Image 1 (tube, rainbow, N blue to C red):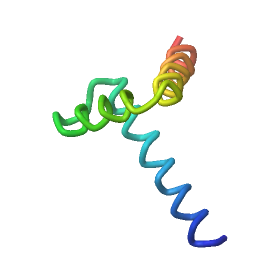
Image 2 (cartoon, rainbow, N blue to C red):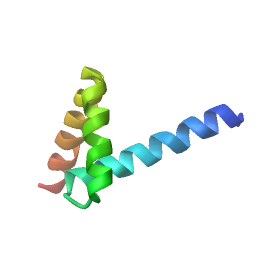
Image 3 (spheres, helix red, strand yellow):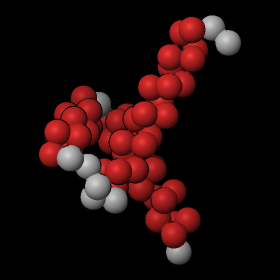
Length: 61
């Protein structure tokens, strides 16, 4: 696996873990600010969080 792909996968895992922490209210103040900044960057980011929220909520029922 190339370094670039490995780095991308690592970032994606980090982001998904942070977003899960955010959804469960477990982020630090700095992490919450980081997520909110990320959300404000694009509509795609907002849709990503919305999709993750929906996926998590259907799995918890």
